[in-house]
Length: 188
Image (cartoon, rainbow, N blue to C red; front, side):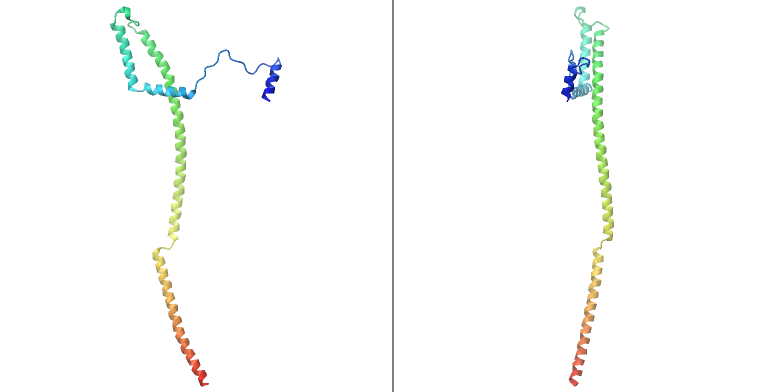
């Protein structure tokens, strides 16, 4: 369908073309690779090694332009060219450092969001476990303990012993009664 529209727009002279080829191609770059370069550059600029290199560079520059004969100097006393070089270095360093800081801020934001989610899950898990422990404590409070069971079993055993004794006593009475009944029957 998009091809049909493109053909129709080409065939019509009153419709401008949708896509034009650029005379000069825009440069393309990988934003992640460039960002990684910016972070590496910013990390290097924050080291003692960079400060040592810059100090040596400026010292050699000043020494050369101060101590060599005038014909060999390339930057005379006010050191305008050195100032220009340091300004150029600073003008490139500042945006790269800001880019590195922005990337770090985005990473920190993602990590903070992940930490927040993990903390919320942990809090929910802890609340669940606290409720479970509380319910187990309540259930254990209602469960018969070993001492309680022993006392109940002893009471049941005593009751059974009493019933057995009563049954034996009735059996003896019954035997006596049966013996009397038989003796009555013999007499009759």
